Image (cartoon, rainbow, N blue to C red):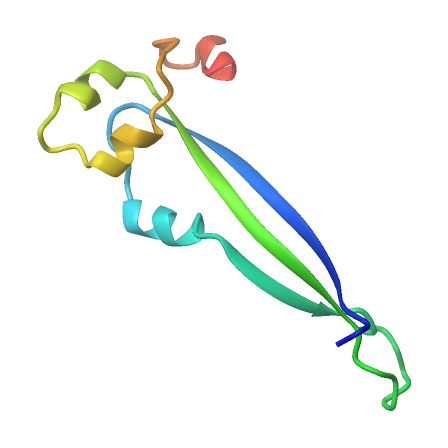
Length: 103
């Protein structure tokens, strides 16, 4: 299609947790790279208009700030996926502490 254009989109997400990471499989699927095609003439009333599309390559990266990161890293029950996404530091915030914002 000569009327196709390509672009890309990258999303970075930082999840803040204490030590548990619920719904890990859902996060893995949601963060999977994909490509979508969007018609450029969505609002066009001309049914005979040539189908021009915009192809968007979508990717993402997940970062996890854990209050108890050392416990996760030393745990045999924590997944390798969770460990690979952990930030290498923790602000160890208390409940309702300004350090939650820094995290």
